[in-house]
Image (cartoon, rainbow, N blue to C red):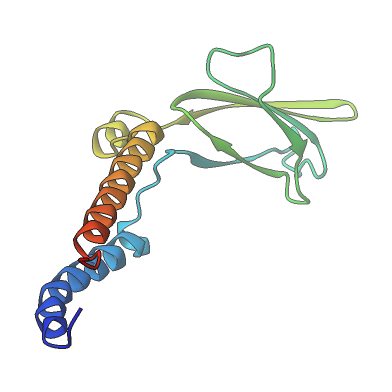
Length: 152
């Protein structure tokens, strides 16, 4: 490439680079972040019948429609709180056990207002789109390499 071609290429790449940087800054901004896997962080707090926190209680969490097999297990903290990730909407149940006491809670995750305002994008769709973009980039790179070959 000669020196005279470099400024014209620079003029073409400049706006493209600025657009890519603007889109990347918007996508990485926490205010505009989109959780592609759509999980909800849920906090449940357990207490005894007299209102004292169930510290260090054994906790089991059950997903909607799966009342027999716990999907998350662990221990509550000193305040009786237990945090877990819910990967789908519906009624989740959690059960905390201390020696001699059991506490149960039903937690509604999601709902109509959230499901209407938050659209879920399949991770397979995103991976497929990225694969297509990568194939286009490789094709373009090979095409550019062919046109730059020295002529014999």
